[in-house]
Length: 118
Image: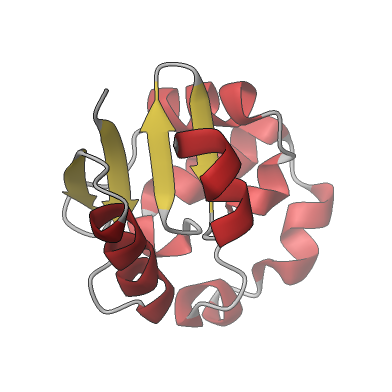
């Protein structure tokens, strides 16, 4: 079953993750996050399905995150406000993201991917 691989091509972690998928012969459909920004409905579903707190979906090391001074805002904003912020620009979303009907993985941790995707 093919997975959807959401990434930013200039991101070194995304490049490592893509290579891992290829090396492990995992079929994937690719989506470039800054060209096809996640919609509010998608983000809400992914957050729910992942079981992770919404804060794990923020790219906290990104330039835009820092420019918008989101560090403090994400601590006090409502879930709806946080989803609106994430949906406003794909560069705010942590990547890579791997989607399959039964799972959502955020970020690349090889040992986690081994257990979840293979």
